Image (cartoon, rainbow, N blue to C red; front, side):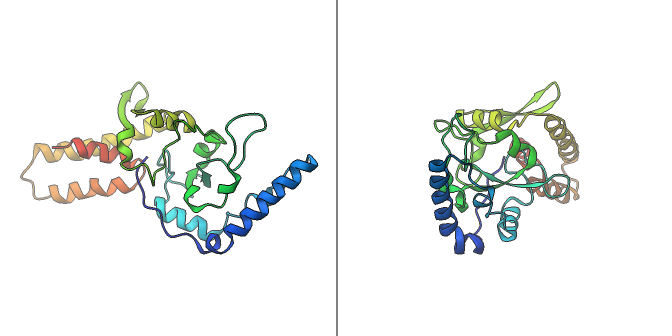
Length: 225
């Protein structure tokens, strides 16, 4: 995970979020009294193009959790950090009032979103890439038998890893490939410190911070002397 800055609220939410939320809460109450299920259409009005585009811009087309690219090899999912509904009889309580709250929406790959589902630990909540700054204090990277593991350092980090499966296959191996490429460039710079091409090479590594698994690249750069 890496920190991002939340963009301005999309116009569709600015204009409609309050009414959509009111309609949803009213429908939940009506359906509960009638013993029926709330129609999905009351929950999914946030799936507007301007919302998707704002989240893609905010996260540079990368999953807010695993940092894989979304929208090309994977479906784009709009993630509710605090779940808009819960599985019947299973904690935690849902937050339907936050279904259309801009601060609760994030960009996620399908796998992370599916694994997380409706989980939410109130005591040690899953990390928020916008408000948990600096996010690096919550995790580290360590070498494992299958590659590079995302290693939590705090209770919130542990929740994040457990709720999204940040060490599932093939993430450790993919991180290892990125790490190998970065190490190769940095080692060349160390071996030839006077090489005039080093500045260009280092800038190329720094560009990778904004790409897939960028927090790992930043982790390596932080230790590079």
